[in-house]
Image (cartoon, rainbow, N blue to C red; front, side, top):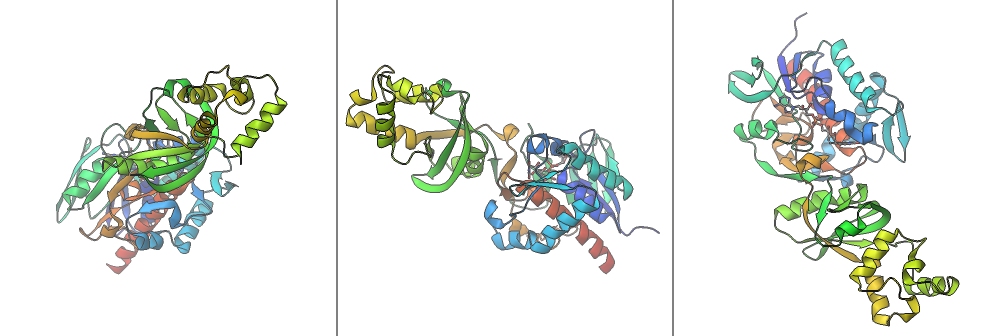
Length: 407
Ligand SMILES: Cc1cc2nc3c(=O)[nH]c(=O)nc-3n(C[C@H](O)[C@H](O)[C@H](O)COP(=O)(O)OP(=O)(O)OC[C@H]3O[C@@H](n4cnc5c(N)ncnc54)[C@H](O)[C@@H]3O)c2cc1C
């Protein structure tokens, strides 16, 4: 039986593979993928374990211009479709604190299951095929390194600028079809700080509370392990703030993070008085031993101009307060991020205002569908970005089948 429409999907990543699988029921589907195999990025996700979803999959974990449309996309019924889909391709979830991983603990099993399902469903995958441009003249003509392909319906699933050196072609194609691209900046990315002390604390990992202030206004808080590096700060706790930082920096806003290195101590001065009483005849540096990595305590002592050999009781009240301030409310001015090549996702892209959230079809150009990270919707760490990729792929793929039924 002949299939209804020729569908081309540009990009065989997370959202493109799923869109292809769902669209293949009624359509002749081809994926054009520039790499030698689809789903390369999936292999790197979740430190190679693929954190593919989260049990608390709600809009509070995302940044998007249009929350109503986001909520339509991540409706309960669509989330259930993701779960049913993963069941259907043989991925059994291993759920840790709400984070979904495959029971195999290997991202490769997710990639292989998706590629196999494409094969079973008759999706044609053309690897090593880089798309350069798209033209429209009654049908879509896709210009690639392997020649030109035509189709009735086109899905753009090329991903964002994250984790690549060059710019994603998806933005250029969508601009050509009159989509507005909201400023794209790196997200889930390391932050570059200013200060001549950074080399001293390099390599320290510490559980902290971190607050982001933008133009002196509190924007967001985050808690967890922070990695102190010779350029600034890294770690999931910092990643959760990075989307706001990179957007703010692109608008020339002042971005400062305030770090509490000792959130577990309620009253620092009494804590130190007690500790000093127990640990008699110790220097201030020795009093810090056992509660903090020496690289960090030395950095803070240097910033406060306190000699490592001084004793706690010899410090003036002002010096004790200065130490307290730097340990509980350390201010690091952020001047940059580590950029697109290091980022896990991007802030910005095609506004959700410009798509139909029930189909992922462009409201500007018919028969053009957009999925995944190209859209202006970025999630926190925790399976939100892959989750958004799967859901938008399912919506587009199902819509392509439904449209054909209606044709
Ligand atoms: C290191 C890392 C770890 C991550 N960990 C997690 C995690 O644990 N959980 C989570 O939820 N998210 C994670 N993410 C984010 C997640 O991987 C992405 O949000 C998701 O893959 C986006 O899906 P996508 O389909 O939009 O794009 P992608 O998965 O990036 O796929 C785009 C595809 O298009 C292809 N393509 C691009 N340009 C062209 C072209 N010109 N011609 C042909 N093909 C092209 C690419 O090669 C690629 O295969 C991580 C990202 C990174 C980088």
